[in-house]
Image 1: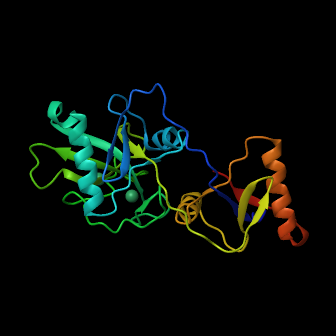
Image 2: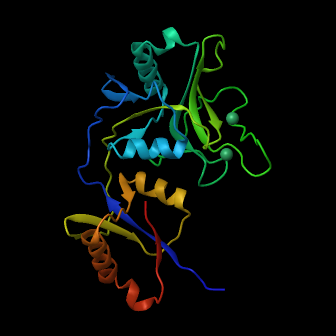
Image 3: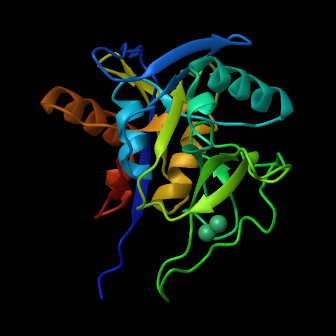
Length: 241
Ligand SMILES: [Ca+2]
Ligand SMILES: [Ca+2]
């Protein structure tokens, strides 16, 4: 059996804040946070992530009581909860990288805010193979303290509404190189599964690399060759976004 060396590259965020245009989403700014709400269409968690990223945004993170208050204010302002008895919407929280270890995919931070609905997260198994690894924000007008803008893990493949917005945090790490006007970091000494690699990058304000054309590919190749990795290793496998 071939030994695979699974490595990954990191790519720094370059200015790509695209504006959402022509979409059926509502939008508002609350407590200096911008929110968008897909109040008329549903996607599975992965497609919701792609939808947000293609607009330079991220799925919702609710990291503390203040952020919970802000999202409640926003949702009230949309009028959605006046005309609907319940709300279920994807957030960025998931335990795809390691069962039971929930992280906000948008920031890479661990989910420390204890705002789960009663008995959640329960990783409920619909069949023997898959549990629940992605989290929604849920509200039900008859639920009392439970279902009161609290969290629940659900199957990532199910389709829900979703809430998203911009993030403006950027942290520094040490070793990197700039090639063709992009900054790259290379995790050349340790390996992670894809979901954990995403968390690692996001926790540093960065992203897994995207390679959309020859120019970007050559930039990545230059960076890897400069690191000396390919001089001492015959094979390289690394994650992209
Ligand atoms: Ca789970
Ligand atoms: Ca659940």
